[in-house]
Length: 252
Image (cartoon, rainbow, N blue to C red; front, side, top):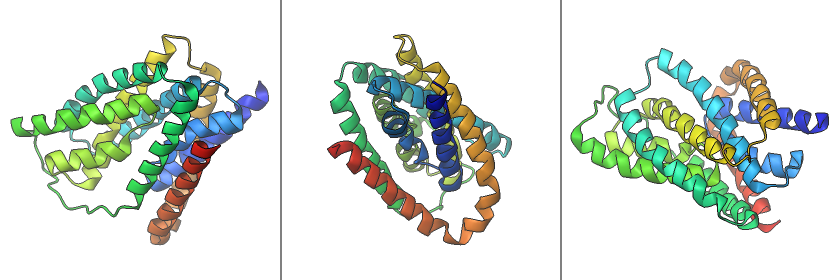
């Protein structure tokens, strides 16, 4: 049991480090780590536990971004409310799916996320954007789809949320990245809660992941300035790593 928790904590350190350095995508490694390294046999339990850890990490980041004034709360709230419904539906759907099929579908999602990380994103947009009635009709459907994917795969869904917020509102990348944490927190919380009600959340492993994630985040902070010049190259390298892990998960 101690070895299991230590391996989970080590995974948390790695994921916290990657999330802080690259701003997304790192959490998608949590489920494969729990299955193939920690040794969690039940795919559903691994997804539930990683989703809970993702929610906690996102909530921590959200507090920091909110203090900095980057979160567009009205837009983020509409998106998150619609997505919350989708995340519960997605989690309940995943519970009915065979574990082997689910982990292979998760591998496909990993590759999609990695590809999205390779696409250049412009930061142009309106930093003073305000919610309008027209925006609501754009935000809600995209939020529902993002939540469905997040709930089904037990991921944060940030690779869908930030671009969706930008497309529907015209906000900047910085505001979208910050505002997306509202949805990631709620989606991860709803997904893990749905599984927890059926006794499929591994609480000790979850605690180890979160503790490791905090250490990883702290360790990454001094590295941010050092890698700034090579951030794009490193991000692409990380995306290729995620693709490789995704292919491993699919064909194993």
